[in-house]
Amino acid sequence: MSTDHDERAPLRRDAIVAAATDLVRAGGLSALSLRRLGTVLGVTAPALYAHVHDKSDLLRAIAEQQFDLLVERFETVRQADPIERIKAQCRAYIDHARESPELFDVMFVFPPDLGPAELPEGAELPAATRAFTVALGAVEEAIAAGRIDADDPVLVSLALWTSCHGVASALQLGFGLPADLEEHLIDEVIGRLLKGWEPAGTTPASRRRSQP
Image (cartoon, rainbow, N blue to C red; front, side, top):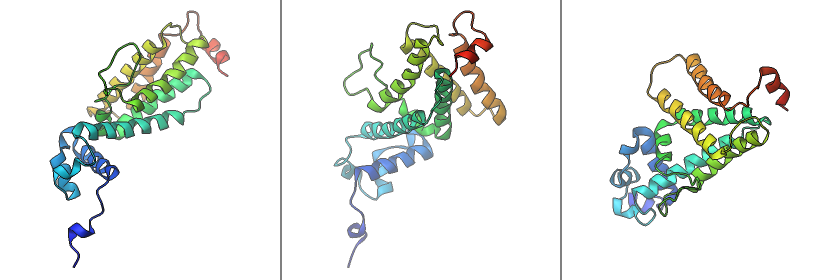
């Protein structure tokens, strides 16, 4: 006679990460524990240690997946004009945050490698670095084309990221704003910030002429 234990599928890391993702999506970071995860999977918590090191390992795996999804969003942005590409990437970032706010919180447990600062060993998340690098590329192109008046593309990218992150966080607070007002808020913040880097003497007509 077979038992539930005999019929249970072998425990796999991808299934563990998927179950952990569901727990976080449903209840936030505080909902995830190895004991609770073991209960969901029908195993004891110690059985998980053959596949994951600890809770931090699980969070890292979830964050990696979420940043991979964000990179995919960035890579679907096809605008030839770098300023329009920056705007579209900013919106893609905010949309990603709004669609799954609990998982969005996990992404920033681990930082990208921005170059100048030294991170503790194992702290940097390669997928986070890839996402930042993709966004940085559009900023570098805009500076090279004279569309952004700045010397440090990393600083510009960080300012854009900080603003987008702030908008995403504010919208998650649930102010109950009408959908159209939320969209205007996103456009206003991104547009005002980019306007601050416009070269002196830029006019609407010159902006149109500079676009491919």
